[in-house]
Length: 187
Image (cartoon, rainbow, N blue to C red; front, side):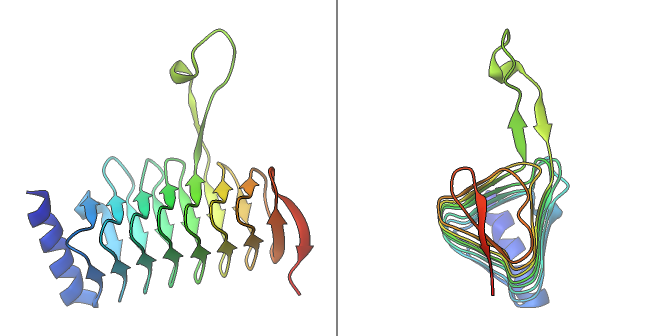
């Protein structure tokens, strides 16, 4: 049944806006997913909009193999020409917005929630904090970087491979390290 729903979703988007959705993609919550013109959802990529505000993709968005976008309670909005590379995860529990022309490298984690850590109770039993993530336009996020809940990454910023971003990054900054700090500004 899932294959049939994915087939219908792929066919509708191909005819309506020229988007290409592989029949090997994992698409769940079809009614809450909107694709712009000429999007590419590759084989083994996942779009999961169940129990969420949905997933909205602008024009020419690309999800490469094994990229996973989960709408979550806050939803995910991807601007025009956003590319999410292999094995990256975007979790929209607290809401994620990604600006136009942003490149997300392989293995990146964008996680818009965190767990409580107080003593006296298991971490699993504690409340989860949902905080939105906003990533500006023309941002480059390097391989295996992690963007944590509540962060804003300014337009034109570069996040180095392996960085863990737990605080805001200003526009046109180059941030690297664990935790990520601004190393310099783009010239």
